[in-house]
Amino acid sequence: MDDLNFLYDAISKGIPKADELKNLEQMTDSDMKKLKKELIIKIKEYKKQLLIQKLQRYRAFSENNKSKIKNSVKCVCYGCVSTILTYHISYDENTAVCPYCGRKTVIPYFDDIDYYLRTMHDYFNPEFPVDEENNDFWY
Ligand SMILES: [Zn+2]
Image (cartoon, rainbow, N blue to C red):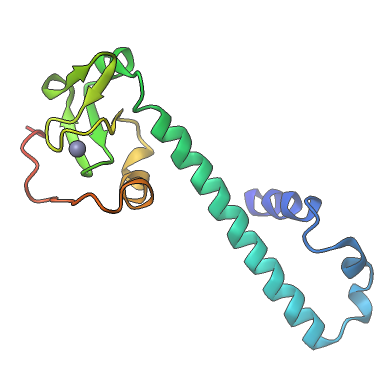
């Protein structure tokens, strides 16, 4: 059902164009293939935009986050892709600093974040090294 809502949303944004839909019955197989290809590309772009918006929302949690961090038992850092127990965290004014990489890229842990952490790193800080075997702050 989510997929249908998503498709409806995509179509309501003008994908594909209304006149293309009106002529659907008269379309040749090659037109249909072309339309399908275009629709798939548009849907992929749309999904990518949704993902980027989500990553940006999550990134905002790394700014002025001292009180939120202090309310979590553990945090994650998308600068170095680490999971960190909160008592290892230090602060620069109101912003948490990662004890492992020294960057202000720490966000409170929440269920969804395991799935997006690596993606956040690769999207925002692909140049930062990830050393997944050397995380001292998990214990
Ligand atoms: Zn880090």
